[in-house]
Image (cartoon, rainbow, N blue to C red):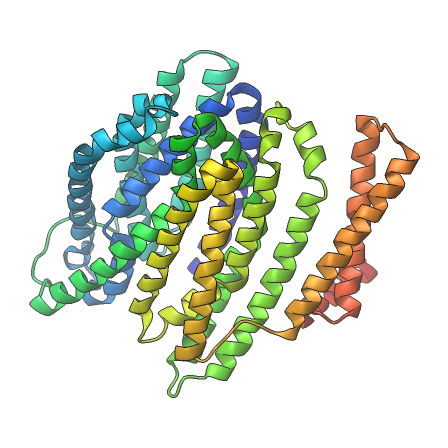
Length: 508
């Protein structure tokens, strides 16, 4: 087994361990021992620090990968490359530090009425952002060395465990106060950055010694243009996931931000499968579109195939979540407070379904000579999201934030797909997607039929009955959906997996 395979397997294991820790932390620790306002505070602090650090990077992660071949040699400092990965983000941090203090008065005025707690702790975003910044820098350096497992373990397991310990020290054992909890956040990210640095230094394959010989005028010009593109893209990419949280905090308060955060975490389950599938397919689309001439037909087949499977898997997860959402909130510690986010779950899950189904179009555009035009669409996405959040949250509350996310995503992907069809010639739609929507409608209908039968059996059910009924009902709906997919020949890929699974079970 090669080093890439070994590192990939170890990194994947670390990711799933981290997901398990995050699940326990979010649904059992936060909801049990923190108030929704405190959950909202921790969420918006991390979001603000993440935004700050992402912008301060100045695109270092991507530009390092892109320009690595220009520096690569047998030396430990790669002709000064590692030195620049330290200096450029530091300059970016100083730039955005100036912006922070220049805009601090505005930040206070925006948040002080409804989220005064955030105003009290906003200065903690600076050290947290600095540590997040260099965690990412050192992870990028480790990636160049093809050593991703340990940094992934640090980010996914160590950081989540450190935050979990902080929550327990504050909420369960009452050893620290809220100031101490925020300090634990900063220390945890600081230790994460330090561990990544120690790992790089102990590997004895890296040096941060400066070398200016490779910085030619041409390289400098190419780097600046590429960095400008990346910074603009990073601005939108970093702002978008956190935009609704900031608007809700400013207009409604941290308690509602906490409710929104829990609902959003549930919704993230919908697009988890898409992350690995997109990573596998993107290189194939790149090969098809970079061929001479571009193999548009092959790219279209891949785009349609992935979109179909993403829609099928994501919609199935969404349905299984939604048909049990009331029971989930009843079982969740203090679930009656977070049940206000029930419809937020459905709206955000739908938004993530749209994203996972059509996001490969962004990759398709990025592999062509028109890659820079993607900035226009990302700016449209951000502007539409700002306008919709500002308009809908005062009218619809936290559901307004969710509708703003869904609405801006729909606008973005409609315009993007039209442009990709015009410029590249590829598109995601196929007849199979109509079959998927039909299967989804039938699964919903079957679920409500089973709920009607269960209501006749036990008009006032006990919690034990509800749990058993939910397990049986979910199993019936899931199996029925799988049979409809298989015999309806909705997806040949899924049918192939079902046949393979059936053969394996028969052999056993």
